[in-house]
Amino acid sequence: MGAHKLASWLEQSNLPADTNKMFYIPGASGYFLGYGTTVPSDGTANWSPGALFLDYDASAGQQWWVNEGTATSSAFKRQEAVPFDLDDDENIIFGTGDDFTLGFDGTQLEFLPATDDTGAVHFGDGTTDADVKVFLGASTKYVLFDVGNVLLTLEDVDLRLGDNDILQFGDGADVAIKWNASNLVVTPATDDTGAIHFGDGTTDMDVKFFLGDAADFVLFDVGEKHVQFDDVDLRLGDNDVLEFGDGPDVSFSFNASSLVMDPLGNFVRIHDGLSDRFELSWVAGQHGLPVLNADIALLYDQDFEILGTNATADDVTYNAEGGITFETDGADGDEVILLPHLDANQTPWTQVTWGTDQEVIWSCHIKTDASIGNCIIWAGLKLTNTEVTGTDADQAFFRYENGVNSGKWQAVSSIGGADDAHDSGVTVAINTAYHLVIAIASDRTAKFYINGALVETSAALTDATDLIPYIGVAADGAAEAKKLHVRGQKISRAFA
Image (cartoon, rainbow, N blue to C red):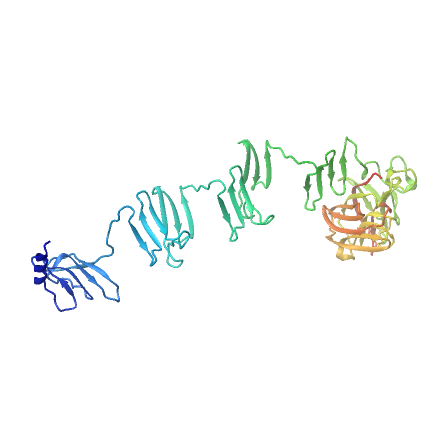
């Protein structure tokens, strides 16, 4: 436009003296630009359609208004946003120090800091937040940052980590998972710290490991509570141990030449079909009934006999459920005691010595009767047959007396006359089977087991002391007949 034209317009302009400062061009429909602290009210005349008004009221901040009415009746509407276009490589700049720029470089939209690894981009402030959803090719495929559920959801979207990229767990990066180009590796931050759990013991699921074929697998089955090997072998190397029991009570291992089974009471080593321990096993009643030594005949047991106060041959009978039953005669103090024949050259149970220095392992199976009051039961390795704790200077045996130790088994060990009657913690019950084991180790300590549970480990027993296995029952405190059912016993020792 020529300078004379602009000058003419300015000469004809009308600038009212009120608070609204306006610029008017004659010949137009009215004012097209104004500013002030009061927006023209609806219905005001002389404002051109599309006229702009800048409201700079400090209390509300600067706002642009546009007349969407007519020249004779204005209707100003506040503009929420003003669209604008930026060309390639034109940026929006944030921060007084031009700290961030947002722009399109012709290929991608970039949001860059002025200095690398400086500042951050926040969606929300931790108090006033909104969901953020990123779509990937379809409305059903997206990544959702869900504020309400505090959850990151990947809907029909995969997550890919490259070789040696790490997925970390724990506030201290306690566990890391990565694919190292060959193996999936799970490592803790500190060696031998933490554990991997599948389930929590309340809400669990089956776990199946396949080994080369859908039919070859190892299954951890929650419903059946077992581990299933389907067309899969289990291999243990030399001296690797397979253990059984809570103790563990039994173990198997291959020591590079022999398969070794150690059930702590039935010690077996298999080597070329021949055990490297001397071992005896006695099944009660299998070879007749033990009787008084004077009554021994071919009909009776060639390895064991009975003795005790008022004990006679009729105090021993076969048990219909297996084994034999002892029954005292009925007077207070009556006894029935089982022991191997002590005569020379009659049985290896006494002709072979069971020394404390030969790793002796003895065990027995017995069962209590329906009445165990006014009763004493003892079983184990002793010098003499008595149930009295203080008689033998050296011994290792189990003892029960209803009025002693609250009716619980005692694990008794005596070393050079020093007696220790240890509380096993196992209360003796009626009609109950007990598997009793005493295992003397190479250091001469004796371990006492009841039904597979270790209840006591003694101090080292006196060296090179030969003991004898005894099992007995006695009436104590009342004139009553007392019964004990004996299923069998076993003993072994190392070869010297």
